[in-house]
Image: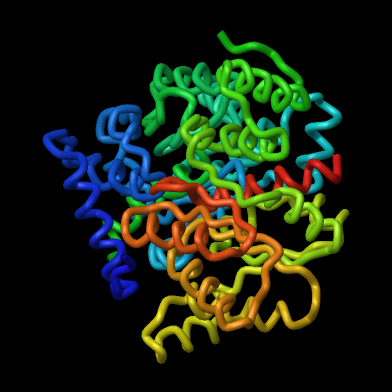
Length: 210
Length: 210
């Protein structure tokens, strides 16, 4: 039976159901709202186990958001899913270079993915001084390039959200980020996606804008 | 270990791995590419069981796409995820009314969700004559309104993709669509999402554009 429920109350009730279904499972209080929002976005409780947080990753992400950071995604879909009102309130901006014509051209010439080039564009952006958060829900090659750029001293991101989904190089690229020394939130294994990347950004923003 | 693989070959290899992991599981040939693309998008094999197709739903969707249909989504994210090059090739258009100011206003006045009003906008669009596909990955209230509009004779969609995700009214609203008599592809249960809605549209388009 369909229950009549006010739009505003749907999210609240959803989180109550998620909490109930998590049962005895104890979540780290710092990470709890991120984990629950990812479950809210996917209805997949595996994320309670698979999300890996480096020490105080959420606090570091929130600090960057408070400082008006740039968020760089690897899909237009992740960019769309990040809450625009919250971004505006915080003075943050979200960028996705994947559909830029010059990115496609350079990728073709160099025989690499557009995601690789897009991360280089992010590195240029990071030179402007604002903190940088990566929200990567699709391309393993994005994570690989982020790791290289970090090792070369080109970037020093406040947080890497590494949640590509898929079957080729996905698991391995996420392990690279976990071992990189960069602050990270990673969905270990094959699962993830642009929706998950956006949900993690929103979970952090909602803690300081609502 | 990270394997060097050409961008073009990643998708092919992913589908091979999915086929291998599905093992003995036999899929209806008409639905196979839709199911596999949803798994490709989510890395979640539960969709091999949970996706429900009405008779020749995929053929009906493809026919509408060939006829230059309108696709209406309930999130900007689903709209973003639908392949623009394929849409253009087919002369199709994708619409999302959720962020329109007048939709928000009317929803507030009437005390309903923006998704409800957005589906009414879609009904107006359908009077222009092109076939209509709904790609709903988020809002149960969108599915409820689609069912009402169909029962009132206001719309006669070529296909309803009903794949909202979540915990409140989601399961029930999807069952409404399954029992509605409208051609449908539904992800039974709590799982789904804007990414799944987009993937189903893309899976159908790629069969006639690649």
